[in-house]
Length: 251
Ligand SMILES: Cc1cc2nc3c(=O)[nH]c(=O)nc-3n(C[C@H](O)[C@H](O)[C@H](O)COP(=O)(O)OP(=O)(O)OC[C@H]3O[C@@H](n4cnc5c(N)ncnc54)[C@H](O)[C@@H]3O)c2cc1C
Image (cartoon, rainbow, N blue to C red; front, side, top):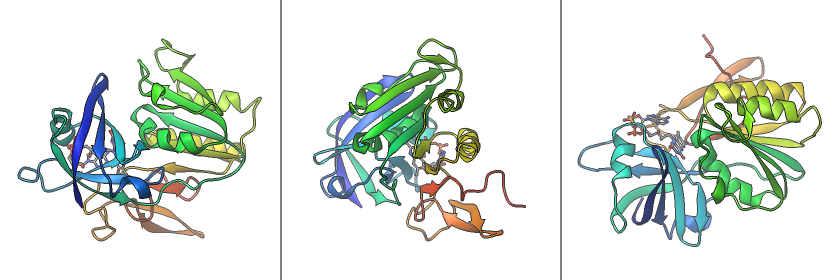
């Protein structure tokens, strides 16, 4: 746990912000897919809020967040020079693999994929938005082809990003896939990857308590042979093999 200084906190789209935090101790060891747990106001709120490490630049970590409720609303009003109490880097990040990869992200699901994208040698990044794209200028990797889908068709492919990914697979082949986005989207990606025999992993979200593996609040069901067991998003994830996660409950 450390107090970090806010270096910038900028609005980049409607309700979406990027915050740079001077996180000298956390930045050097942070891996793509890991997250920080942020205490937004120690007097008002007991629970921390988890945010993916969007990128690392020297001793600065960047987080990209969408204003959702009270915590993120407060964060959006924080000013440069103020301090934030953060814990991290937490969780298991993305595995780095060889070969040609596809990265598939939806909306704010782009956040953990930016840092990952910088490490990729070759492949395609498929990013979907409802309307105006954001954060694409954070991705700087000449080895990566970036394709955008928007639901309203204002930029790139008209439709959802999973359809764009699936259409592309009729002519292109990938050795591995990484994803982050809403659960229904990841479920669809799992189907597509299964049909095309592409192994992969995805970053998952669940309400979280301690983020240290003790409270079990963020547990999700995963396959265990022909049975199932629970794994904790905070400690065993947030990145899981896409094939092991059970969608839609186990009851
Ligand atoms: C591993 C992980 C990484 C994440 N990375 C990002 C990111 O990079 N950018 C981003 O915008 N969002 C991210 N989220 C979601 C983000 O944590 C929530 O949007 C945020 O906690 C909402 O806080 P709030 O106080 O504004 O909302 P409120 O709804 O007021 O929050 C109430 C409580 O519910 C929890 N909560 C609400 N929604 C979520 C959620 N989706 N996931 C986990 N806890 C939630 C809050 O932490 C808080 O304790 C991530 C979640 C996880 C689990």
